[in-house]
Image (cartoon, rainbow over all chains, first blue to last red; front, top):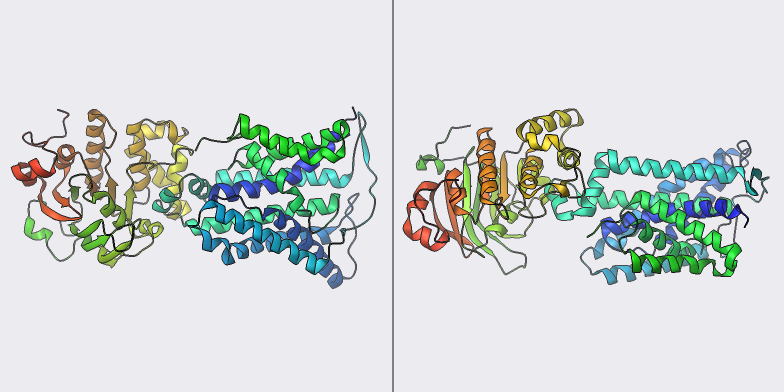
Length: 301
Length: 262
């Protein structure tokens, strides 16, 4: 068996993992499954595309690519701005929709998130059409790593970026006051208020972080594959599979869950064919729910 | 601060109690008050206990003061400031700390993180110094600072909950049944720690079922029945009153109050 699936799996897994961190944070702090999280991925990618276009227009040209990478500073700066934008978009979504449903039952909120998902996706199609687009169309020369494995410089850089973002999130949650407050709210909101934590503030921080990471995930899809309005929605099932597999509330768990789902999907392609790829995430999700509902790093409620 | 002796009843009704709860009506649902006209005053450095039969609204009263149960009418003043409708998370900033009866520590966080998260309102420079002060007061916790709070024993959890509340150097410490679920020996330990905390200048208000242990350390007591004051007075006098003891202190009238286990 060709080992190339390992590289593909790690890349897909990184994309899924970054998105799953947002899902797992929203679930543990706001206590609902946000089905609109996939749209934050799509909006993040389109935002980066639009902003890099504007930057290119301002400085004239899209700038030179950095070393062997397919993209330059232009896209990196656009990506950072797009992360802020997507975080703000998540916050606006909370302000106009979810904020009013804090006391509603879980099904109502989940249905509302489905509605938000459709609305955001349609809006994206309306603005950018459903035609796929790209950050750039240059082909990259891949490097041989031996054992039949090839990677492009972009792929290596993006795996590094994922590692950096997950480490940063982990340190934020374990070493900072905001992170401790987030863990406190996810365990016990009532006690959190008693110890002086502004729970609404923590909710806002959660939306911003989830949105920003979703954007990073979307930009990765855009660089490695393509940008289309359905790109995030198509990732929704793997996102939830990864979040549940890793254990709801666990940031490292979301990444590891993402990597497992990504590797399983990529491994399934040469074994059972690409058309069954999506079913693998679903089977993994079912399996986890049956055997270990709390996930790998989950805790009992 | 005027030094007030608990025995001096006239001075308790004096001009400036530290905590003043006036004619409070509160409950989870509008129009259905559980606390129905409770009035409590607490002087600086006092220990005041609120007693009463099951369902008297003791717990709801203390939660309403802490901002966790909607207040329908009446007022709460702390150190002269109106805090009646202040959101719960701002109470610690005003100097009012609360220890709930159950789920009063973050079980998935370490002992130290529990203290750090509670010290969130302190400036970063003073936070670690304050933690060491609190550890100095609870040496057992200092030895277990890396342990998950969920792994602490029941008595140690109550200690951590109190330590967490003391992180912000509160003016008033309120506790909802600190003796609940503890063995008589541990009840004695927890209450003697409360007496120590008061000696540090912290004013304490507690709600208790265990009248015997609470009256042993309290200066004054209120008996709440059906959400309103029924009796109030000096702790010792209340204990000696046979009617009160028989009706409202669970018939536990067995001579003078002591913190000793029977």
